[in-house]
Image 1: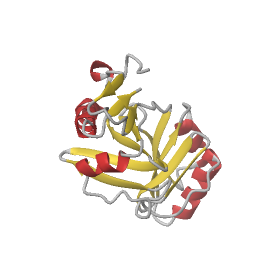
Image 2: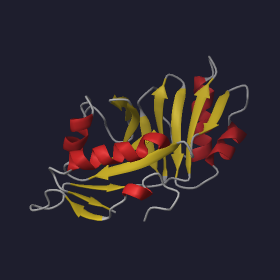
Image 3: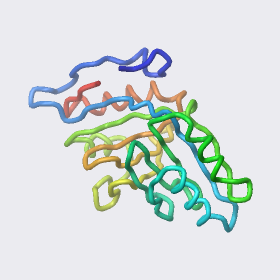
Length: 195
């Protein structure tokens, strides 16, 4: 259920939509993580930053942009050299990271109130996403945990594969409603369920 403060509240329509004669191709939802945090290393401190993220999340963070990991209600992925997006189902991640990432290692920026997470899952997820983004979402190109940063027209999106047929999309909160409508429209052909 979408909370009243969600930017999607005005367009949230639970149920099945589109071409559902042969079943539902994808399910769309808003996971609403408690924390979305960007961390960036100062020059030469990339390894120390990765170690700090691993300590704060309990995940073994891979080195490199685009690489990532998912587990225990948390996920991490590289968004640029020495920069990572770190997500936790619970609140308080920014404070935990600030405790492990000192001013000597890098910076911590809490984006929790500036981003909206949207999840697409199902056997047709790659097909729907491919309509919107010029990205090869095949599992060999975007394996579990890894991510891509791309645009759909002027809407910037960071997309992480969080399951075999599951992707979490992070968009600016101010564009969330517009992007949601676009995603629903793209999913009409395959049939989709909002929950």
